[in-house]
Length: 432
Image (tube, rainbow, N blue to C red; front, side, top):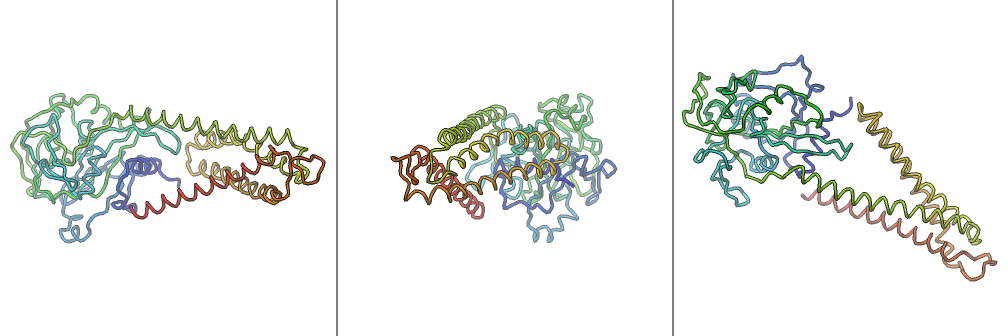
């Protein structure tokens, strides 16, 4: 089976934001899209006597946990499952600190956390929810525009943390986004008056995954959520009604509002960032295309003009002609590769990747083989070539020979530079 699109795009997104790879646990990644988690599977499970709502439509990228802590406290069996909608910046901070921090805490980087602007002062709690729908509301889970480097498709991505929480540390209260006032039921499995959990116990919330809701920009995979995003007002509601809950949970009675529980970070203006990024990419692409067009074209022209002006090695102008012709024909080949990958094989990523990979490999092998062949013809002639007597056997047109010689040196230099850069990147990846 081909790799799930959500897993691929999610991995690309995390890489783009420098997600700390040391905390990744790829063996426990899990996708809950319609393809990977079919509609006939359960929407909820019972964990530690409480309802665990499956995060349908989301993809979990597992975070490594302290197994000794989890085993000692029987976290997997006795703690409850919950979610925390947030920004990707705050998610990284939470994972690095291994828990949700509280306002007034100081991070390992020396930054004191504050209650986010617009939230109720004095509420020094970590907030979670048993409902992924509630965590996904725009008020909590920030949305990012992300363009996949694989197929240039634009996606919208939301971020939430998947956690385990100690039952007797939780204070339960109702939603605070005025959904009841608008007659909206946020979650089909958890009532509105039990959607918020809060705690002051720092070690009572353990993160075991970052969840990403990945959607193509023209898709609306979850109409119910879309309705909520459009209708629920992102304004503060400071009251709630206590409810009957399991014995292990306690009920809060104070006025509350959700706050960010990790290091605050200013949310980037995504569209502006994307536009600037795409503008830089277009400039770089234009420069590369200009160079890639000029060099083969010049090589082809020189090879043709002086095709009979190199008696010392008649294959030198022929080598340049072939190099230039193949170089120019590479552009339609690249177009064919993109067409095959992104159009004809868009439903099966593996097929498209295999075809484009084969064509690319053939081109790479040809240019390497032709580079070596040209070296055999050009370099040995350097010690005896002369440019002044056209009728002599060792004659070669000066412009022709020096251009061919320089072209070979440039190609070898680029290969050496690529190898060095790859080595540096590999070493840095291992060290950091």
